[in-house]
Length: 75
Image (cartoon, rainbow, N blue to C red; front, side, top):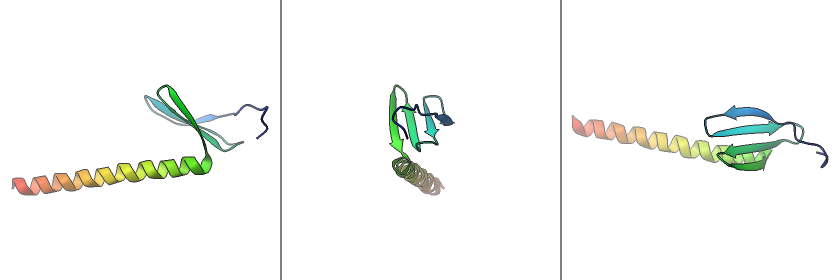
């Protein structure tokens, strides 16, 4: 990307307190969380997303297994 051009980012995801924008010209993602913003290259953003998904799904699996175990002990 030319240093003198502005990124033309479009919103690709949005929630109450955060959003993600992407500039297809320079392949940069902007992660906005509350008052903080992070500019990430495509590969770094992808790695970050994988880490978040792995953590989230791991916790969901753990919570589900815990609920099943608690339900079995109640009966």
